Image (tube, rainbow, N blue to C red; front, side, top):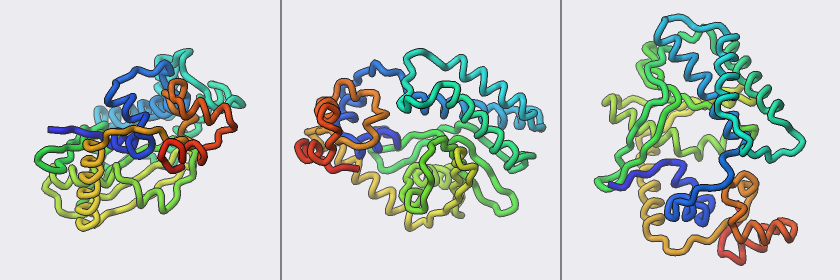
Length: 273
C-alpha cells in the first residue's frame, strides 16, 4: 500500500528535484527550518492547547495563558539554525507576530462553543486499493445545529488569500473524503481556513461530484510520481525558503546570475510557478 501526504505531492508539483532529495534520496538538509515554519508550529501548539484545555475542563483558559503557552513553545522549539530569510526582520519581530495572531483569534472566536470533537486528528483517505493519503486535521468540529462536520485549518502565511487559491486547495478537500467515509456522513463537509495574519476566516464546501474528480486527479498525479524517472529543478520564489537550495545547482547558477528563473527553468525543462 502506497501512502502519500499532501505535502509530498505538492513538493513533486513544485519542484521534482526537491522531491527526489527529500523523498527518494532522503537527504537531511543542513537548514533545520525557517523562522516562518517555527512561527507556524508555535501558534499551532498554542491553539491546540487552547482547545484541549476546553475539552478537558469545559472552560476556555485566559488569553494570558494562551500567550504563555505560545511563549514557552517558542523558546523550547527555537534554535540558532533557524533561518530568517527577511533580513530586515528579527526573531523578536516574528515572535510578536504570533502574539498578535493569537490575540486576534482569541477575541474573534471566544467563548469557543463550537463543539470541537478532535484536535490534530490523523486521517487516511482511501484513494484506491493500492494508494492512501495520510494527513492531520488541525481541528474537527461537529455542528449539531446544521448536522455537519467542519474541518478547520490554521494558516500563518502573510500571503493574502484569494478565491482562486481556496478553490484550488486540495488538502482539506481530500480530508473531506476521509471524514465522509469515517462518519458515514453523506452531507457536505465544511472546510474552514483561518488566515491568522489577516484575522480572516474563509469557508467552502465541495460537492460529491467535485470530490470524486479531485480523487481521480490525485490518483493521476500519484501515477505520474511513480512513473517519473527524471527530476529536474524548478526555480521559483519558493526557492528562497527551500532547505535544499545550497545543494541545488539550478539555484546556485540562477543566484549568481541575478536569479534569471525563466532562463534556468527553460534550461532544466521546467516552467516558472
